[in-house]
Image (cartoon, rainbow, N blue to C red; front, top):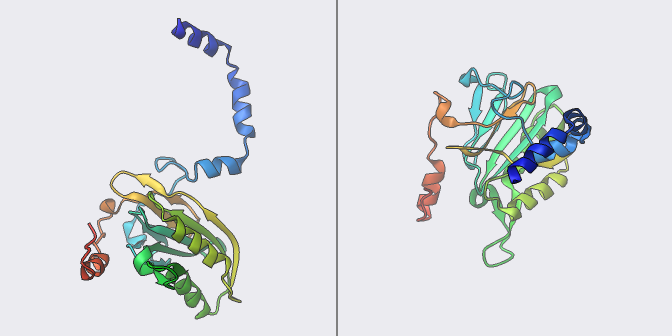
Length: 224
């Protein structure tokens, strides 16, 4: 009986009107719900030359260059990704912020309160050391298990950037790609702004960075 009802309903659906309705939905709404194109889509970033990729490990940051125009990071769990870019100048900055080593602590409470993102400081210092000025768009990527306090602090730090060489034109919060094996990930092409997921195991040039392991190990709490 239920099957017959479903079949009868499907017969009455006006698919042409449904298509028109979907077209009329605000693009911004769709972007918010589905931040990026699927990695199998023709519109997404296809990494054909991995020598053009600069990997950003946990606790690190990088600037895109003509030789490595694609920035990529992965394993965004409790960590937060910070992307800043000016496509007109093909400039991009990407960091993988981890709470313990990517923040200064004021010590306002027993455990300390994160106050300043060191990666935002690094970005500002890098730009101010040069001669260019940039109109930067920011995207903050909370990981699969976001540290909400850290995300809020990073966004506040971006809002408070005070530099004659930096004009912040937008700051968005979006989820990274969630993919098997690499957790929350993002790859960004500074030449055109294309983004997709990233799996370091597919990169023949990938080298495991044990910096964070050694830092955690020094505290008697080695990262798994």
